[in-house]
Image 1 (tube, rainbow, N blue to C red):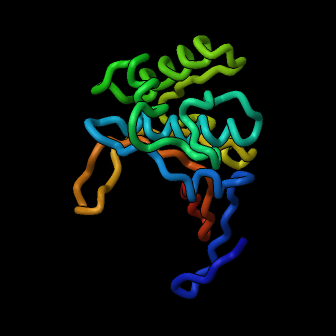
Image 2 (cartoon, one colour):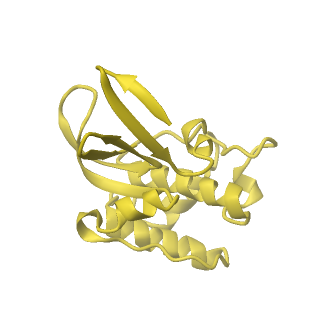
Image 3 (spheres, rainbow, N blue to C red):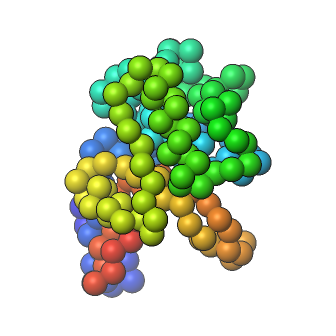
Length: 159
């Protein structure tokens, strides 16, 4: 997929079925729960791809995540610490979730994102943690789910 922006050619590579991530309603990110919110996206993505990653109690009739009441995010928060959302803590929470639900999967955390670009290039979304700009031009620690790459000249950016 190619788009024109500022007279420069930008090429994009998205993970397969990225619309699952792009158009999915999700529980609100409150009280530093961004890593848990990103985990909900990731689990739903794998649920749609392979099945079995999200119990039916967290999905509505259309297969979307509930965003009110007791949500998947609430279940993940019970496995971790509410105000502790960084790569290592979220990997631990996901592994506890996999074990509890009998899912044969393994989450890992790599400092400085080693391997993240390669995984996205191979078609796998990844959770990224870091110090980012918010809408008010302030720097904040945040977690996001990367589901594509944007190439412009010699610069590669996560989408």
